[in-house]
Amino acid sequence: MENNIRGGNAPIPCQLEADKNYAWCTCGHSADQPFCNGSHKKEEATNPLIFSVDTAKEAYLCTCKETKNPPYCDGSHKN
Image (cartoon, rainbow, N blue to C red; front, side, top):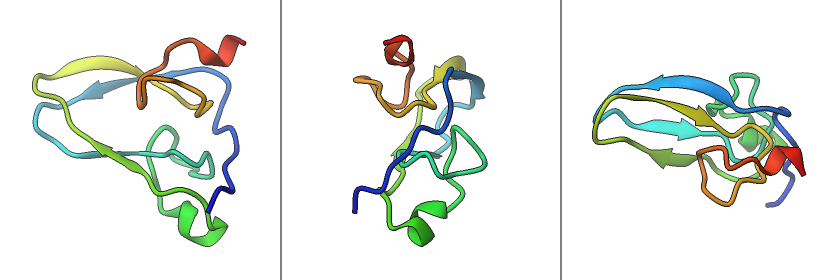
């Protein structure tokens, strides 16, 4: 089930709300980057990563899908 692609070439700043569940796209096929829109099912790709934060904050979420700290950007898109 590894039919993944790059979803973008730079992180997207997102305002995350406390205690809300988010579905971060792991496959790159979603048109709603960096979040999942269900495209992984049609593309037979990887499922989203479900995550939440304890306190509201701005975060830069990865779109290249190469981060070692998902869902957050770690600069891997620059390599």
